[in-house]
Image: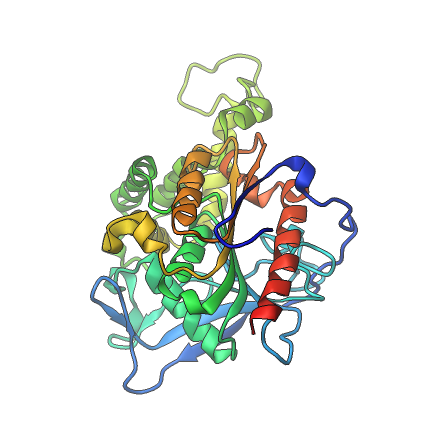
Length: 402
């Protein structure tokens, strides 16, 4: 991918093709949990709070080699969890959320790499979060859970990596909020990652995204069933969370994708009902997405994670993005998606520009797509070759450096 201080813009013709379309599944996997509860230790949080004990839910794929230099960590987005690939049972209908890229012969080839994915703290996928039991009270934390940031999530991930005996990642990969975690890791712990692949993300949460998040939070907190965040054991704020998800989901799509998928088509009717019932297919789709989300996600987790997103700003402490990247050691592959209006390509190019200004090794690849922000979860054919080539090249450079 070139020498240090070299920036490459990768075009479609540069992307290797011919990866096996029938590449294997990651197989049957299980979610593991590790609890850190050593007396006298705490996880000191950026906002001044602390958290202890800390449980991390995670999944692994492939085998950690003897040199422990083939670990790739995947960081999940807002609504994700540790189940990134494979299935929990032969009867499970859907595989993990990024199964298209993880497994034998895929971009994150589990015959080569040891892939790790962990649920963030503040989450509701098994790691310590608002629905966990507060040891001080014996009841779920609710809104007594301390405020967290993206940096705090990364610090908790490092507890897991230490537990697994991984001193340095070959690569850190993630989209959206996952991309923010990749960036924070590369900046705050430059010695712990060799390759960084942030995609569909930004170096700071943009104003428009903060605005959408605030509307979603207000929808949850306006639900009478929220009860100040202490609703566990009773009826959760389903209506508020569903509305929050509907708002968020709109930002994940593009105008072109929505027009193609729905247009102005009506839902099971021949003409307008002239009521407030959902007449249009897009309305029914959003209602379905909102309700389905409430079956697997916690409302308080939505509040805490969106707030963590809003606080994310790599330049906050260093004064500028260039200063933030000054001590970074990782080689970067930055991916943007043409129709993403939540994190448009210009926000990824800002990252590339700052890395280039500090003479870092960075490659940039813009995926042409109609799928909007969600494209990083969908465009396997357009991402797989370039990610695979970057990891293969990076693994060689890593081997030469140790």
